[in-house]
Amino acid sequence: MPTNPVNIALNDVLINQAEEFIGIYDDASGRFTRVNKAGAQLLGYPSEEAFLADLDATPRLPALPPTYWEALRTEARRAGRQEVETEVSRQNGELFWGKLQLSFLEIDGRASFLVRLSEQERLHQAERDLAQSERRFEAVFSNATIGIIVCDRQGSIISANRHSQQLFGYADSELLGQKIEVLVPNAIGRQHQKLRESFNAQPSVRAMGQHSGDLQAQRKDGSVFPVEVSLSYFYEEQDLYVVSYILDITFKKNAEQALINERQRVERLNTELEQKVADRTHALLNTLEQLEQRSEELTIALAAEQELGELKSRFVSMASHEFRTPLTAVLTSATLIEKYPGGDQQDKRLKHLQRIRSSVNHLNDILEEFLSVGKIEEGKIETRPARLDMAVLLTDTVTDVQGMLKAGQSIDKQVSCQEHVWLDPSLMRKILVNLLSNAIKYSGENSVVTVRAQCSQGQLTLTVQDQGVGISDEDKEHLFERFFRARNVTNIPGTGLGLYIIAKYLELMRGTISLESKLQEGTTVTITIPYDHHSAD
Image (cartoon, rainbow, N blue to C red; front, side, top):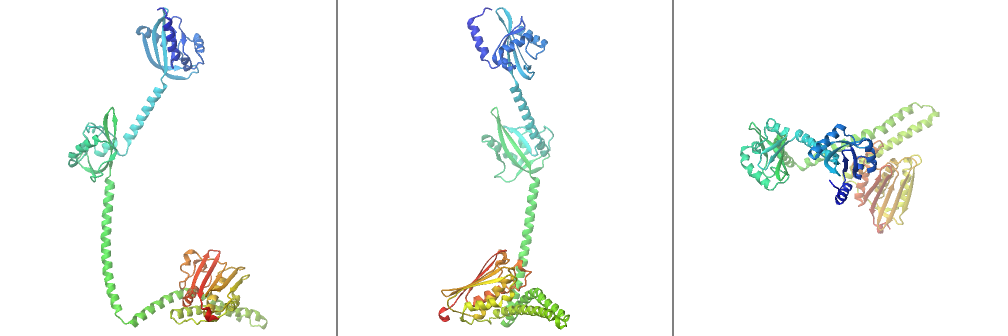
């Protein structure tokens, strides 16, 4: 066949622009006479020249056995064209899967082949991915722990997983080809076809039975059981397919029914209990009505006895601790005094006598507090205002409590009262002694207790501040109750009556008390009392 310059130019363009291997193989010489750049690079050569030079030693396509290469050429000469998929080797020995096409032609009267080679690795990878994806889908579908059934538009079952077949009591593949209505009880099945047609008209992902109550499904043997069903769909070549996800909720329904039964039982018990309470309440009201008919004196005596019993209980609880310590000290000191008969042991006798005196004073203070509470609650304490110099009262009171100070403790007093006040001196002294003794008792050694008194515009403000153990927020709200003691001072002697007595005194004097405290930082107590400064002058 004579060569044509136009054909030659056109062939050059087609070969050089191709993105796959294009080569001309001269059958007579057994060599490639031409190859494109993309083809040389596909086989791992830097250029066309490098490929053709290498083919001088190996005139066939790399990695193809000589007999196979010969058979491909023979078949291409016979049929005019031959196409196969085979493994091909690059120059570095790396193998890839390729599609090889041989087209027989004559160039200048010489038998030749147009050789095309394209890499098929992407296609094979896609096929492998597809196969792997299908295997994963099949594993999920087959081994799912809920029933999955796929139907076509006409309601014929085309696929059912293992769990759905077990759920409905069918053998493998027995459901295929049957209508979905075989799984629906007869009463519902007559309407199911209309529901299916409605879904086909407007398919959507949704749960069944949202507006119709509980759903029932039917096994092969005719028995029914409660289910939850969700619907999905997909299209394949314009055909609609519906996917049903079916879950047996028999256990759930049984649990719900058991819960309802238990709730009903509890409600019955509550009703019976309420009736018993009502009956007993009625009986109690009758009893109370009878008690109310007794004389007023009996009622007052009963109330007093109840109050006395409560106070007695609290007193015994407190006294068992507060009385035992000073009484033990008195007994111990008296015993030890007997052991010092000699005149040269007078200092030791005096030491124990002092302990006895201190313990007796402590007991006397406790009894004084009890007596004060009794008088307050019986209304026997009245205020007796008199002309009072706060500076003198503060000095005398601080002197009185000096014996209570611990090692290194001191009292800092500050008075800012330019005028006399008209208040009850006895109650004021008791309030001051109680506040100062608390501050000293609950503070450690080498600490300072600060007491301030300020008179301004007819009002006395008295503040006592310590550096003691402090009071927790939980305990603050109970501090003014009788016999209450904070949890962090139970090992320190005290009756729990001091602040209660102070609050009652202040009520009589129309005063107020407030307290600020933080644990381990100290406590500040502030009292305010109005006074008549004109009368004081």
